[in-house]
Image 1: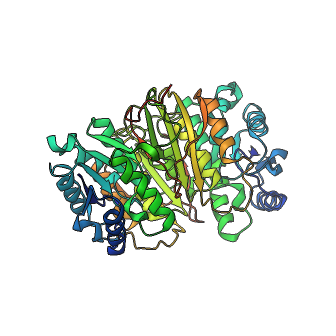
Image 2: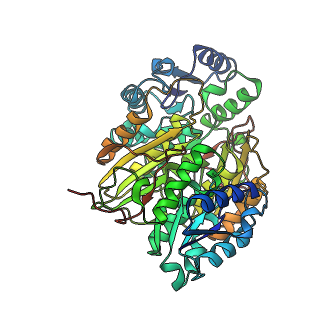
Image 3: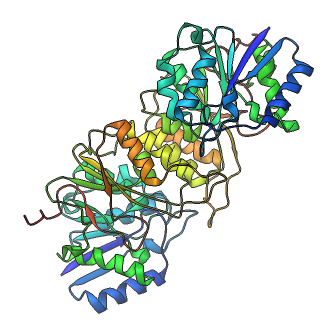
Length: 276
Length: 276
């Protein structure tokens, strides 16, 4: 039996999301239980409750030995405001858990990975459980939490540590006290709803601040708004340009992003080594 | 006589901008000459010419002893791509010049200030010369370059070093090799066309990476797009929150921004000390 606690460190979900995920789990994952913290449905301005409310719910999930995993309900914006306090207050039960989410929840994954707490993984979230494509993304996470690795990002080789982040999230995280050391990692980055000039600008900032990586893979860059002028370089040309400028091997695309094709990327060396 | 060279390190302007500024200068600033580099009107995708074209024009202006000042024509995006190479190739004539611009051109101001080259100033740009309000902002810069300090930001006290930046520009600049040391400075920041959650996110990144400042002043936060939900904090509450969290004295508002009220902020101690 896998017991998963769900809380919302950034923005809230609705009860419809809860019902959709519970039905999927009941129908297809008989060995899995999901427990939604009531905080998931709280709203305070932009956030799923104020900072203390979100922090408290996260700590209740992480520090409860009854749970095997903590699944972040939704991104949006806000987990950065509580990440440092959260890792500081996580006890022994938090250390043996798996934590799954992506997008804005990358702040928390970064802080946890920096602190060496539990097993972090980039993966889709319960907020996706209402659409057919989203449900497939959610299944990948549930399968992985059940020991089935079929939903892992296919370029993981099990011998090079990996990490995956939203591009803005990583840029804002870089150089804060909760930034993990990504030296030697294959770093996968994705973005949504940003202009190409903004993608270029984020790569400028990262190229000047990342440690020596094993390489970078570019995930999906989706919902790029139209600009008054064509940028003049494609998303992949931008990534190649800055990798070259920074001496980072560009390794190609990654199957992560704000799409239903979003795959699971366990941080570090948690992916199984590929058969020879 | 003040000789000003104008080039475009980021995005291009049109000949209409040139005519408008030349007419204003001819009518009101008889002791000033403005020389537009032809590169200002070049276009390559998003940029005013490719990187090498923009870099070359900037260096021609900066390294020419005939000019007293270099005025950046327009922001947008792109000066970050050439800032490091630019300061590396600036010779003796560049060191005695004044450099004026803001918004995206803050990357260059930062790199110049970091390298100790010339006198940098945050100020409006020739791209504003076509509207009545913009012309008044442009006049402040022309007056300041002529020795008239009436357009200076009114909180400058001449005894505490100051600097002014666009919030995103500064966040992307922070921790790159061209970031100047702002220890002990009064830092003024402004932003345009960003959601309040994005403002909050930028303050999160900066609060965790800035050195010990004398204080922070919040400039205009304009053209904030509507979001699907109210953020729940005002722009000033956001600034206060992160300043408090980071131990930075919050000093109130600053008269800078993407508005016609934008004032001149010479970097460092270049503003005159206030009469006792």
